Length: 64
Image (cartoon, rainbow, N blue to C red; front, side, top):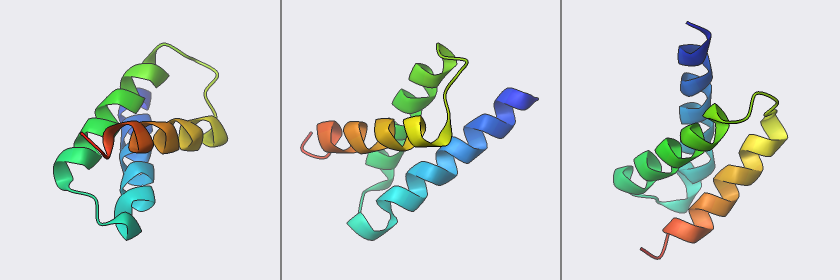
């Protein structure tokens, strides 16, 4: 149940970050999936760490 709450917040964080960048739904889904997989391996992830991952994954994936 807790994992579901985290994935919802990650999804919302990604959507919020990508909202003003005119990102495609596919890009948003790709970033969300990647960040969720990274976070699943790290129990100590906080909001700032997740935001950093979103920024990195956005830059890495926006050109693909």
